[in-house]
Image (cartoon, rainbow, N blue to C red):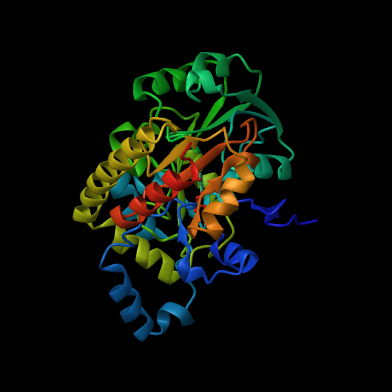
Amino acid sequence: MKESIMTESLPLHGGQLRKIANHFGIPPAQLIDFSANINPDGPPKGVVPALRSALDALSSIVDYPDLDEISLRQALARYVGVGPENVAVSNGFVPLLEVLLGTLSIRSCAVPVPAFVEYRRTLERCRVSIRTQALSDSSGLRCDLDDLLKISCDAILLANPHNPSGVLLNREALLEFVQKAAEQNRHVLLDEAFIDYCPEDSLAGEVKRFPNLIVFRSVTKFFALAGLRVAYALASERLCKQMRMVVAPWSITTLASMAAEVALADEDYRDRTRQLNRERRELLQDAITRLGIRTFPSAANFLLMKISDLDSHQLWERMIRIHHIVLRNCANYESLSPGYFRAAVLTETENEKLIQALKTECHH
Ligand SMILES: Cc1ncc(COP(=O)(O)O)c(C=O)c1O
């Protein structure tokens, strides 16, 4: 029943480097992975030493993790600016979304598309009927919030910044949208997986004011801890309590929660990451634009490009075979025509390799 991770040799997700390396017969270490949006500078410097000393103590792998994840929830609450009673945690976004859909008995959900592929997969698995709003290329893939409210549904699931475009919705407009949704008795499921790059635009601090707002966040990308799996949801005290009762027990390992706590405490790392990402993204975007390739205004650590005058599957393969660069070919994103590619913002050297490769491939 499980479908292959490669659909017509396209991975379902970014970050499938081993699979791609195997498929193309190239050692993984020789590939540059632009397909997963993970901080290229790695986790905060305290994380690995903390993991090493935790392993020395043995109890971190012998004993069960704290069932209530008190310490992790306190660290997340401090980081976001809410109370630990407003936090629920699990080992990824998908299990949290599943729990929420069940807890709220959501039957129908509106989703602007293109969107993260797991939205549809999870909603379908949970038997939620999906009402899509197609984002148009001409509006720059920017979601029309008023139109979204016209769709009849129990809940609305959307990302800010948007994936795959990186487009950021205005905070005030989103707040008004949550308020209107509340008046219509609808829940807003807001995926802020990339909001750490622009935290001033987060609505996480508003969950106490709006019981219909649930914000999903993650430490996987910004803190480069994707392999350790820690995600969290922020919501009213009542809803979080219900969610915590349903989340699978011990879903986060002791080592993962400890690593996340160490990462969250490093304020310099946050500032540096945001500044470096902004500088690198601007340089990359300027260079790509100069090649005549359209990009979208991104607030996140990735850029969506439109290269529609070449065969997109061939281009994706040539980038791998010839340049050892793995892009996210967005052809399997719902409602997106072929020709869209997403690239993570990596280090200056890596970004330069991407620019040179695009120059070779897209030279007319
Ligand atoms: C928009 C979006 N939301 C959620 C996730 C899942 O994040 P996590 O690693 O926390 O499960 C991703 C991962 O790619 C994503 O792109």
